[in-house]
Image (cartoon, rainbow, N blue to C red; front, side, top):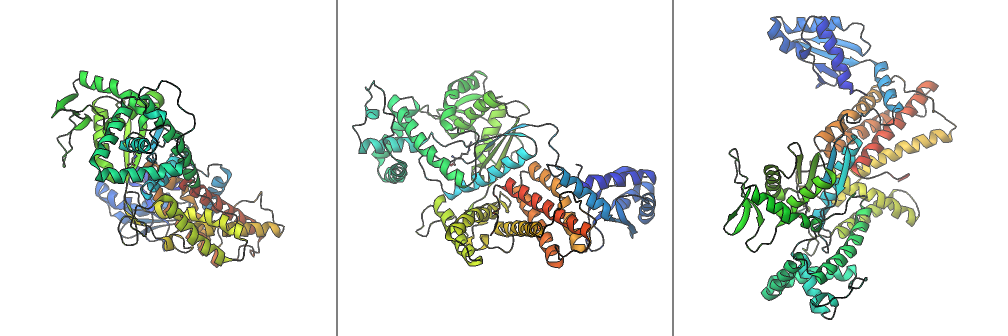
Length: 588
Ligand code: ARG
């Protein structure tokens, strides 16, 4: 379906032409005086210059040309030259009936679907997930769903951090603890055991311990670096350990992401890109892009228009070791080869922006991707505690994701228990579903690039701009629909009828915005626009609900029309929260 603003604009263009003016002046916007009208057109003011005529005369001419239009109920020319537009009730309900009949609620699919890869999550193997990874997962998942809904082919890749010093640290620490294992015997020729030599609990304990020790013990760190190097050079025992570490870690990560309703299509990691490095580097050298500088191999990428310094992109250190940049470049080579995406979107902490500027420029310059391949960096801000500083545990350590989620759950459970009597089991179920909405909505309702304050109390509140408020609204609608059915009502074939009061009209107008909002949210990679929309929509619904006795509507056609209006509102809200990555319970 066309967006309602497009339909109105087209009608206005016709009228401008009919009145003898250029249609380019027919642009319509939402009214900034909603008390007077819903839409307005200010084009007469601009046209006045070209036609040397008083703007109000032009406006009047256009208003005349609009007589008989089925879109408007009231059209007014107002000095100095505004055209105020009020939609006709039948046009409005007709538009909503169109949405209701469409399985996509009037949202058209992209005419030219693109293949889009989204690089998000980015957890580091064997290190516990911390709150920094939460944002990437939540935002990336929502972008993925929004882009997919828009009709594109979207591939989400978790891009594991599995190729750094942490691997060497774990290997070294394991060697200290269990030197008898075959993995450490360079001369070992046999098969390596199928069972991993550690559990996830051990693995999680090993890394922080080894990491802390390496900061104090230079020889220990040296050994870990050496192990990392040997692993990267392909030492067999270490490669076998890497696979164990990956398996154990990924099983645990999958469980965590499942709880967050975050799903990846690909579980690739930095290590998968390594085989592409030698060829890539060779070509960059041969084509003259890469050169030696202070012993390192680099590609110059600065541009004349740069306002801040963009350092050369480093490919290999003087000892021949590759870097984070090298891995990301090789990952581009791999992705182009295997998936040929039109676009790659990276959802990563905004503090990594310079790294991605370097990677994107270098990839373009060296022709690793096509001319038209689009790289986008969606950098997000920090999640802070109430003190405005990066979120920490009470003891001051890095906040693990699991703890944060259980904090939210606990608070949610308290609130749910207070809301009405129910079994403990039901309360736990509901708390889990609503708690996730609290976390996700709390995050997504902010513009991604901004820092925000994680406020358990506010996020879990059922009032205000929160996930639980949205869910309460959906549950309220569900319960009215259920009551209607219990009373023997059946509105299956009913159509939405003309509004009966102002708050009903306001709700209808909000509903018509859906396709425009989702289109913008996709174009701008902005889930916060979906949040802002459903908050407005929920408010409009609740106002209507408080002012109108829906089930008490006397006229039968109007009553079943209102039931349809409610069920459309519910579908719109549910579609939107699904795009944000959470769902509503049956009851709360
Ligand atoms: N593992 C990285 C981190 O924890 C994030 C990875 C982001 N993606 C990428 N292609 N570099 O910081």
